[in-house]
Image (tube, rainbow, N blue to C red; front, side):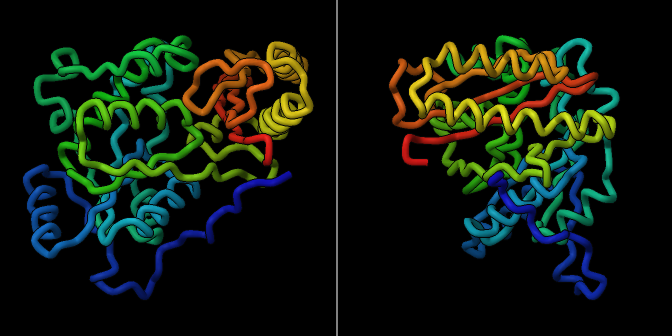
Length: 304
């Protein structure tokens, strides 16, 4: 089973000098002054937005951003506008000390920690919302109405606050990456968007902040998702009709104890492919296991 290797263990360096230490900023004017200073020095700025409770997958995005920029800002903000009713906003894990240490070890220069008032000065109910039509209405958009509106609303604000040259998002949230790319083009943000590869646990489970909700038995079962994605790839490349591949994937997940929202094959732009169309595809799964909703995907071509 081919998996993206986990980055080296990221632990704070006890011998780090002051210049190596991450700077935590909670005040927007202070953040903008820091950005202006970097700009005056001709430095390229990278940005990695997160909701915290960070893991090796997040830190790999910071390391990737380092390949594209001179200074890195990462944000931690648990955004209330992208959680739907009965979702896990209140119980979403907050781990600020561990996040700060991990970001420092990954090479982040500034941790931007806005509060709700800084992000939504008129309050959440009066916030100007961003809606990206088309790509945001299918799959995750259909099962989590309003989710991508919340994502785009907060990311557009973060882009305005940080004003990066490049921003890095993980490919695990495949549709989110597509939505962000469309928003950036549509609103003429002068920002390069880079997708970071999925980092997996030893059993193939895509790393996620929500994996900690899984019980030990569920964690063993969770490997079924990645195996199912691989089976979907192999079946479609062998000539099995797409609808048959999707039906078998759904049945496999249900037999293992999952409740799937979808198990589908799509073109890389998330359009529905015709049978025999193998120029570039992605298999996508969203399914609940117990109380935990897991998503994952696998990109491939006929040559992969």
